Length: 211
Image (cartoon, rainbow, N blue to C red; front, top):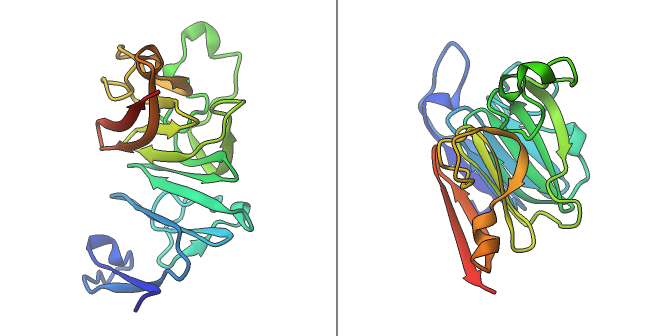
């Protein structure tokens, strides 16, 4: 059917009786969808639905059926992405994140990335069970987002921001991980306008044109 999608695989059921048969999910009006090794997320009119892993429902229990993320109810969703252990979405030009933050992939303070003298100064986020708003660029709206296994990328009006686990995939010419969004200066220096980004598990691909 035009409004349905069928999913199959090891995670089709999380009950004791594993099923490898396709599961039908109603996706009428779906604007975007994301799937990772741990969870699935759909952007539907006025709501986000997620199930299995990093869900944004406020708890740490897996869901066997799609469930609306109530914190985002009524918002117009433009884009959604799923990483290895985190999820993000764009609603009204703003970026919302939830899931695991061990490598700073949510753009929230991560204890493991801070120096010893900073540990007493901030509240650190290990797991974000509800969607949290992340300020990427104060003057620009987010147009599209993507997630790697433990890193995140977002495109604003012509600029690329990345954060999370770094082994070259963030594009900052360093191997230092980041727990806050940082603009990739390469594109600014080369006078390139970024139009899209897609993250692999451990790498990042960007489409850019000359200004």
